[in-house]
Image 1: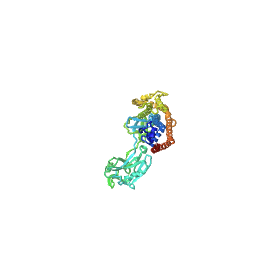
Image 2 (image 1 turned 180 degrees about the horizontal axis):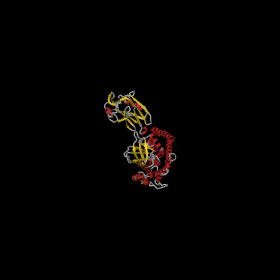
Image 3 (image 1 turned 60 degrees about the vertical axis):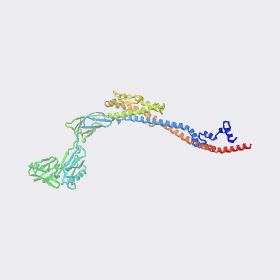
Image 4 (image 1 turned 90 degrees about the vertical axis):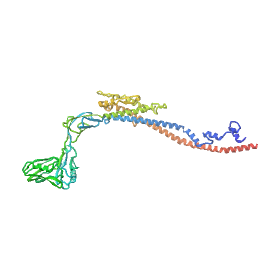
Amino acid sequence: MSSVSAVNTLLGSGTSTASSSVDISSILAATVGATTPGIDVTAAVAAAIYADRAPERNWQADITTLTSQTTALTAMQTATTAIATDLTALNTLTGPLSTRTVTSSSTDVTATAATGTVAGSHTVEVQNLATTGAWYSDLETSATSALPASTFTLTSASGATATITTGSGVNNLNQLATAINGDSLGVTATVVSDPTGARLAIIANTSGTAADFSITTPNFTGTSWTAPAIPTGGSLGANSFTLTPNGGTATTISTTAGETYAQLATAINALNLPGITAAAGTESNGTNMTITGTSSFAVDEPSLGFTQAVTATNANAVVDGVPVRSATNTITGVIPGVTLTLSNAETPPTTTNLTVASNASNVSTAINQFVSDYNTAIGLVNAQYTASSTGTEGALASDPTVREMQNTLEQALSYVNKPTTGTTTVSTLSDLGITAGTGGTLTVDSTTLDNAITNNATDVQNFFQGATLNGFANKMTNSLSALTDTAKGAFTIDLKSMSSSSAALTSQISDYESDYITNQQTVLTAMYSSAEIALQQLPTQMAQLNAELGNTSSSK
């Protein structure tokens, strides 16, 4: 018998036929899970390590569960914090319940009210609006046309004056505007140009009589006086001056807007003043007028060359029967918290009715926001107790924090407002049209809510804020604080515990990898590599064995 047959006989089923021989290489391959003769060291080691990592897979599953729990609980914390924010807005004096709107019965008066202003009705009667003092010059050819030599004085309401002389460094309207603006008299001068020429406009910086101003020119005494020139084709503004013949009676002469010097001269001559003659003439700057006398005469020209466009006045109004004066058309302090804006004064004056009330839109928005955030929170809770398609509940179904959150949200709905004095139309959430349905989610009847806000705003505010900020909002906020407190609230403690457990498992996996798996990979790789080498050497050894057995057989 050959040596191979002998070995097969020893390892086989007992038969001596070659067909029943055993392939030792295949047997060794099968022991390590290989599909071909020999050992795949990498696969063999991977299979062994996979088995060794069974504890890690359990720990990783625990981390996955903790991650799901953390995500779900963080969402609940966010939703609950949103509710607390809503309640803070409803519970503060600067929140939506304290914002005010003012409605007016006419466009003559509009108003705004500060937060917390006492609601109520008021009347305003506008007798006249505040105006801003304004003057303008006679027309010149252009903003840069040369001005005749002249002097005038600008006097503010406080008595401050500035005397300005033209024709000596101030030679045109642009330079005149600069000169006036440099005197700090509370006025602003600008040049207004149009197709007919240019004028100087002087306007007070603020309205009211205290900011009014006047323009005067010095009196003249002599036998020949020439008025300031106006551009050819230009005209005078509405104005007046006084002409007094020597020893005669002062006569006031008025001009009308659009009048020419020729017309004015004709009017003066028609007065037949003793020894006085007026004549229109021309010069390089346009037209002028000269008055001559057979003897000395006087000209009092308080504003010749300028026209007063607007006389400054204070606003005049009657608010709730009280006379009020204001330098501007914006009035504060008469109605506490209310700013009035006067836009028009009718003749005769009419009465405007103002109503200060809660801002219904803001209040409704704030309450609906609370309901929306509440439903988000209770929906997250309900999801934990609803079986999924696999028949399992949420990751936090057994978490006590979730149960506490559910109880807190549900118990808040039972709050009843009981005033210490008087009665109220808003005792419960249902009085505001807020009711709980399936799963504890809330719905809002907008008609009921709007009616309560519009007609019983004080009761709505008392429901949420109470007499001393001890109403629904404060009660629920206190209850939620056991969950939301950033230092020791249930959410904080629970999330810290989850984070700690997850970190511990991650560390445990890391330690297991470094302390055991890494070493095990080294040991197994060496062991299976040695086995593979031995297996590769086996054919040679078998051949040697067969040879030796064959030699032994032949010697017999």
